[in-house]
Image (cartoon, rainbow, N blue to C red; front, side, top):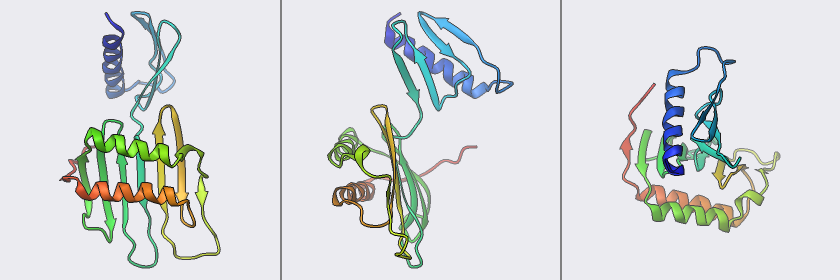
Length: 188
């Protein structure tokens, strides 16, 4: 069986494990499947596989990007959004936005590439984690996080962030404005 099929098999196995759940959180087992070691005590959100050459392979449900805007004393738009690694955008409009409630849309490959390029252009992982001034009141925050190429970084942007970071936010806003949103199906 080739390596890709092994990873697909392991991903499906992890989904089954996650769906069924372990009876006890301390339960753990290791299995060897076609030269790949699986630790079933890991959750689907951070599944790690060690292949036969001891190379760490991550299968993650962490979003590529999360992006939200928070309240202010005025009429600031308030929403939460996330973009999956595959380009699924989940959005929840909370206050002073055109779309109130939960929606989903799909990005094209070109849109995903453009967002990833902007993340690289802004050098997102080298930016500070907080842009704020505690003496300036009534400013909304933009809170973002990126998980890309085995790196992750979070930024709280409330005051005097770099211009390039603002361009990333503008690109996200502009991209979201072009998407065909559908009401999200609630699952529990």
